[in-house]
Image (cartoon, rainbow, N blue to C red; front, side):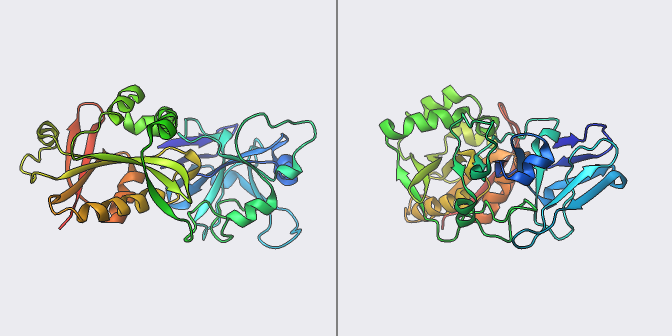
Length: 323
């Protein structure tokens, strides 16, 4: 749970998780509402947001429509003036000013937007993608984006192609090394160096691949036969021989929550179903990793047992019958 508040503390809220996008917007209206070079807006699903106090303090302002609805809408605390989240009742998403958060959302900014409107006095010096309004519009689906004033969505387009690329040490090891050190990956995977060493020592019957969206690497997936000691930890020592354990992650934070993970897992499951020696495919994740649990259930995995992992604490063992 991540909590946030306005400057005076009158308006308080909490979010279950942030899924992105995490955009730095340079449009004129965002610059004026923030009084700075850009607004740092973090996308959150409305169902993951709860206002815990201060609803009576929230006021809103809708700027005149310049091109087409919806209007540019801002909400603020009437006591201290801080911008605050106030999603419309029918909104699927909202955008939270990231500076209000009191803890790390485990995401990092993934792009600059409306860069053609950037302040003359500000220079973008990082390596994040820089999108103009036109480029952003081509990338998005207008009805789903969290921002009240900017149309679009971070969800994966139906036309996007997901592939599992054979792991190439020279090309992909530097990517994997960087991904394993990202806060949103390290939280659930643990020691980056140990995981990197393990990736280079794939056991017999196992394999690994890079998850790609339209040819661009965004994540990593690996699989291996269950070891007897792993099954004892799970409390599932009677699982049939040949069952496969799968781990995956989306390393590029800009693509977290887009749906690439479940689609990549579906591809691997279909491949494993073609192997008559594989009776079951399993995944394990922390009970707190609600995003992963939802993704696994979307593919067809069921929660079989909770168990205590020596490193990660309380976890779910989830499985899918391969035949």
